[in-house]
Image 1 (cartoon, helix red, strand yellow):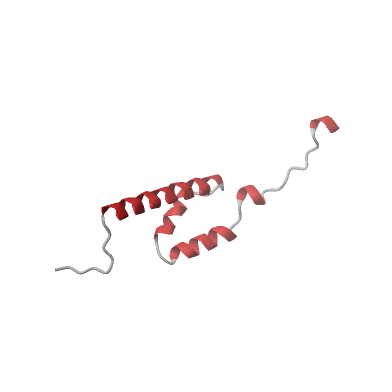
Image 2: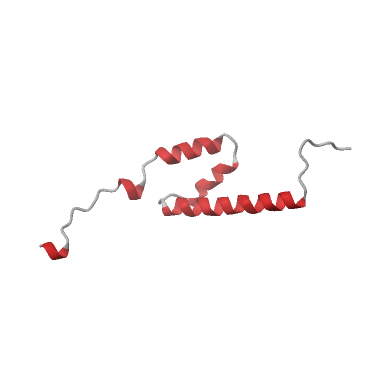
Length: 78
């Protein structure tokens, strides 16, 4: 006889799988919009490594934010 502490039924596993899939797809989309590889999102599947990955992502250089601003003059003001 197998006794488990946590017994998940079909509906719990289905809902958990849907939520996890949605989170991974949405996170990959956000990473792609930020100019990073969407594969970074796979690090969220590993305990403790997910916290480190989010921390590293938050403090790394952002290509769209850190690029130099253009100092061009608008066409109408030349």
